[in-house]
Amino acid sequence: MRTTTSAAAGLVALGLLLTACGDGGGDTGAEGGPDTVRIGYIPGPAPAMNLLLADERDYFAEQDIEVELTPFQTGISLSNALTGGSIDVGVMGAVVANFPARGQGKLFLLNNLEADIQQIWAAPDSGVESVADLAGTQVATTTGSAAHLLLHVALEAEGVPADEVEIVNLDMPAVANTFVTGGVPAAALWAPFDAQVEEQLSGAKLIATSADYEDAAIAGGWVANNDFYADHRDTLARLAEVWLRSNEDLTTDRDAAVAEACPRLEEFMTAEDCAEIYGKTQTYSNDEWTALYEDGTALGWVGRMEQVFVDIGALPEFVEPDRFFDTSVYADAVAS
Image 1: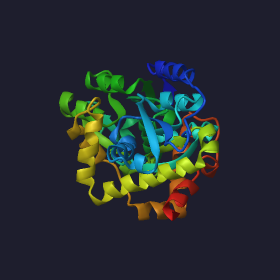
Image 2: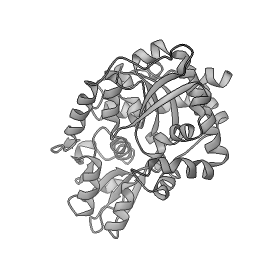
Image 3: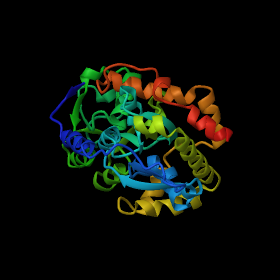
Image 4: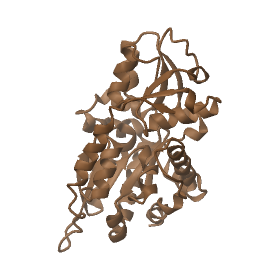
């Protein structure tokens, strides 16, 4: 794919700045006190719901863990902070299949599938009615993101050569603004930016979501930095036990759980938008997750995401997912 001038370079610079702030790892707890875990997260419902619900219901405290939560704008900046050591654990989206594959952290939990969160839209009067019609057009998106991942998979599935689409690489707010103001005929974006499209561009057509393509399975999860993974395996197991409790709540009484956790994101979106976006995810019960880990499905999802990152040039080479995704942390938590 041909890429125009990027407005997203500043995100990398932000990430490098955060990397410089690393101080070497979390507090393991003194004289029997609680372990302190510094957790960075993307403040969206799909990656953060399990985390915020667990904190709201004091599940970390029940495992003798004290958490320090810090929101990050992008998975790139969060991953750089994780690598630099200023964050012990990062809760993020599809980049769980990117930076850990480079040896920068260990993935140990998945949250859900972002089934309808990633979307491809076409402008009215653009002549684009389907993904197949994108050949020869410009598509605005954020390169290397989950939205770009969906676009790549959709083009491949519909037989559109990648080099016949010109990617206009912008940060996601600019993607939405450029699309609704007529700057490009199509955009690959993620919720809640779809709300802006629906409100400001009458007649815009939703032509695809991640749920339309099996190979576009987009999963976010929890990544530990390498030092924390090596030194605090017991803490990771307890974090997984916390996750199991919050996930049980989300799958047995979803409405109540979401209503309690969504106000934690009010700085970034309304509770109503939060609930609507989380409704676009595909969630699984703890028993279902156990089967998905055991039969290799979870590893397969991560591998497919990683392969797309390789295909679009965001990763230099493919690494077998079991080298950076430790599924035994989840298994140990279930067993205990």
